[in-house]
Structures are given as C-alpha cells and as structure tokens.
Image (cartoon, rainbow, N blue to C red; front, side, top):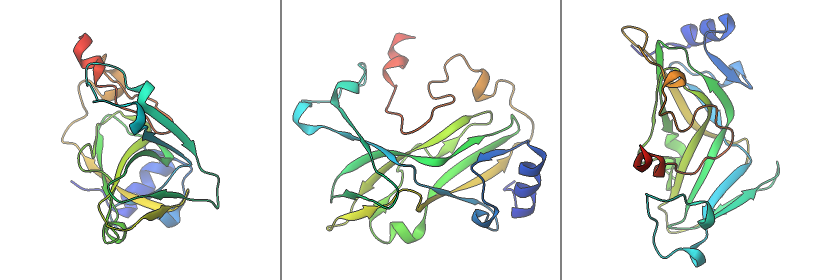
Length: 187
C-alpha cells in the first residue's frame, strides 16, 4: 500500500520515518519531493580503458562540489552520480521508490534507469544516477527539486532490514556514493 500525505506527515511527526532536513511543503499527495545535494561524481574518461566491476573504481572518479547558487552543466550523453540533500531513515516495515520528476524527464534528464528501490531499514542520503539523453546541455542546481520518494507499507516488518544485513554496502551513506559492486566478488 502506497502511503498518503497524511500518513507520511504523521510518521515523520512520530519519528518513525526520518527525513532531514524536512520541509512539509515538499510533501505531495503520495510522495515527498527530494532536492539535489551539492556534490557530484563523474568518471574521468582520460583514465579509463574499461570499468571492471570486480575492482574499486575510485581511481577513475572526479569529485565535484557545486556551491549554492552555482550549477553543474550535464552535457549530452554525460553521466553523473549525485545525491539527495535529504537524509532518510526508513523503519523496518516501510520500503520506498525513488522516481525522477516528470518535468525534468521532459528536458531529457534521466534521474535513474535502475536502482530506484529503497529497502526497509535503509538509512542515508539517496544516490542519484543521472544521464542527459537530450542533444543539448542541462544545468543542475544544488537544492533544486530533483526526485520524488514514494513510501510503501509492507505486509509485515522485514525479518532482516537493510540496516541489519551483513552485506549492506551503502548504509548511512552521505553524499554521492560510487558503486561498491566489487564487494560482491569478495563474498
């Protein structure tokens, strides 16, 4: 069951669902708008022959901070990792879906093509995997509304929520977080 605005606000007031910073004006009928953070990660094409999912990728990354009031230009075909301004914490009985905003998709900005599911028990900022599929550049501004988060009530609380799984790679992440898929190969 998808949670309504009333239930979302009630759970936040009770402290069962955490969104920080929280602005009640960002709550829609069945979701909460999330804003873009200030930090971005891009791949440095000069250093990449090919990405190997078995190995850490930090060497290939360029970290970029954009001050409030400034912008990052995302060129056609370019990919960037970013994160939400908001830090969220889900209880063990609520999962969520992050979706790009339709208004931005109409400009050619894809917020994520996969990875939009957020497990019950997750805590952290949400990583955004964004691509410009337009033929012209798009400006991205920190704190702009970038995505929506819809909450799903589970039939029962998770037996082992994300925050208690031994294999949780992104728990309590802050800021854009690159892939840690290489950890799958170590297990």
